[in-house]
Image 1: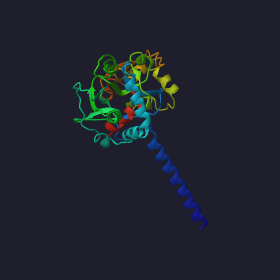
Image 2: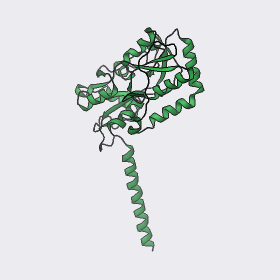
Image 3: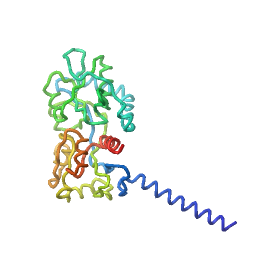
Image 4: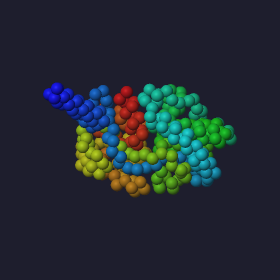
Length: 295
């Protein structure tokens, strides 16, 4: 009986060890196994930023109204954010509604400037528009008693368009608060905290032992040749992180070569094609890219 008990204890112990190993492997994105995955995200936060909406400096009334809505409807705003961040790839492709995409000049329109290539914050789903910013925009429009209009443009044009073109009331495009942008436009209260991360090919082991931003920075500073070619969406914080930006506190990397694309997904496709070695992007966008490319 004692012998049987010892064997049973040994079997249970081995089962626990094996189970722990499998659990570790399942949680470790950098264990060397790729399965059906095409890309991985290095789960190390490289920076700290906040998103906010932008307004003309002369439009303090609208800014105050939006800030009040964000405060009064904080629960609803958080529910929208959670809905998208927790969604599967299939769910992301089921969201959205048909929204006017061209302003008519009517007084009852809330006209939003955006770049609808930044899922899960704003993206096209067939003839529908979806995303965290889009649903928050609809919430704001409803509270103001206005009809929502969302006009798509290149990301780098959003700030300038809101600043200089009369018809645009607000810019909503996962915009990072920065002193540089604050010289041109006013920001709402922040509604989302974010960070920059690296997206890599699934079999890329370059950063596999990195556990913090300092270790990632050390490796980034030593890359050369093809390994030093990276990319992301043009005009975003990811580009500023690589090129350097005093306003955001980024020193940049003189050894890295950054290629800008019109959308994060295009940067990932370029990486998979071998044109660049990694992509730098906001973490929420990286998670959305993982869902889509690894589906």
